[in-house]
Each structure stands twice: as C-alpha cells, then as structure tokens.
Length: 309
View 1: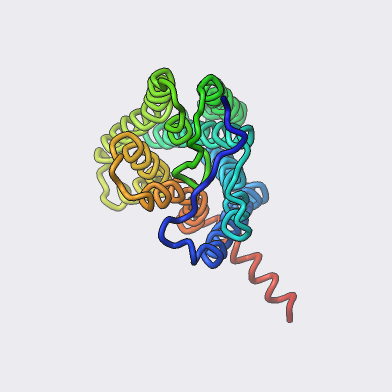
View 2: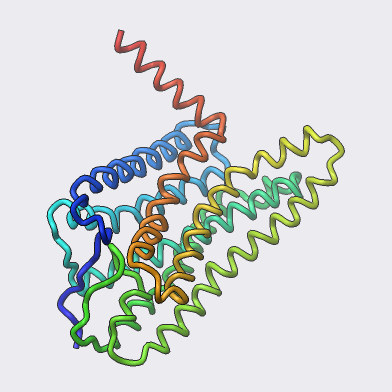
C-alpha cells in the first residue's frame, strides 16, 4: 500500500535548537529571495547586461528561487511548529520539483559554459551564434529536458508498495530516500535513477569540463599575461557556480549509495547544503564579480541615502 504521509527529520542531536536554527534558515531563504530577485531586476534594468550570459544567469536565479521555495517553507513549518509530516502526494510533488529543477540548473550551467567557450575561442562568431532567440530556445530545451527525464521518477515511486516504515533521512523528499523505504525490489528505480544522473548531470559536467579544457588551451596561446588573466577572470564566476552546484550533488549521491554506516547528521547537513548552497552563493558570486551589477546596486543605495536626507 501507499502511506498517507512521510515523516521528515530535522537535525539529529540538535532537536532542542530547532526553533532557533529555523531563524538562520529563514535568514538564508530571505537572502536567496532578495539576492536572486536583485540579480534579475538589475539585468532587466541595465542595458549593458542584455547579453546571453546574463540571460542565463536570470534563468539560474529563477531555478534557485523555485528550488528553495519548494523545500524551505515546509522545513520552516517543521522546525518552528513541529509539522514533521508531509503527505504522500506532496512528497511526490516535492521530489519531482527538486530533481526537475536540478536538471534545469545543470543544463543552464552547461549553456553558460558554451557561452564562455564561444566568447573566448570564437569571439567573432559569438553574436551570431548566441542570439536572443537561441538563448530563449536553450531555456526551453532546459525545461523540456528536465521534464522528459524526471517525470518518470515519481511514477516509479507510485508503483512501489510500502510497509510500516515512513521516516525519511532528510528534511525533504528525495527519490533515493523515499525508494529505500519500500518493501519491494527497487532495482528499476536504482537503474533509472543512475542512468538519468549520468545522462543529465554526468554528461553536463563532462561537457563543461571539456569546454574549459578548450578555453584554457586558447587562453594559454595569448601572448600577454595581463590579457590571459583578464580572459580567465571572465570565467571565475561561472567556475565558482559550477563547483557550488556539482560538489554537493556528487557528495550527496555518493553518501546515498556508499555511506550506509554514516551518522544521520551527515545526510541532513549535506542535503541542506545541496538545496540552499547554490541559491545563496550564486547571486553573491555574480554580484562580487560583475562590475555592472555592483555599480547598479551602489547607485540604488546612494539614491536611497540621498532621498533619506
């Protein structure tokens, strides 16, 4: 049978601090909302940022907002009000959104790597290759690709019978976590889950790596050290964002497949880093590394200060 609900876990060993830890989580969620909305509004308002790289950055911001919103409010209700249970249907929806949005983010990161590759290795063709129309189509492909690969994930869970166990090892629903509670063979889930991870995140990370190999080879051919540093500098933000996404993703996958004897705290902490790490860090990285975004923010702050006097 299918359970009517699943039980989420907080932070094992720190149950007495859940109420206060929720304030930290709430602050991080506010950072996600404010940071990513700020990036989108600045890119929209600043004509000099109307370029493919920053349109992709806006897509990334929307994905991060959706990913955080699909998980954090429920976790806050758990930590503040003790609402540990999540209904079976809500769990399936949350599971789909997490995996679907992760796939979209991975595709967008690959598109950003392609943008850097064309801009550095074929600069004269950049404007012709990555037009606004092509950028929009890439965004649609990212969404379609995520739907195609991850709609089957909750359907594979629906076919599984569950016995008495309904306590998850995370603060939200993940495919690997839910399927481990089933009292039947989960081989189709394991095979499909691994296949999808390799075809989406695995393939994307490999292509990103190859694009940077070609970028590095092109940059090293430049005669001036100053010019090489300047060109590499245009890639730093993207590299940081890629690491912020893939390192927690790989770590969480490894823990689920090979870390059976690890403490419950490890699962929870790594899961929360995976969900909240990129949405918090991405706007900070791009704000720190993009002069136009910094200047626009400072301009708004100066205007507000002048008006206040």
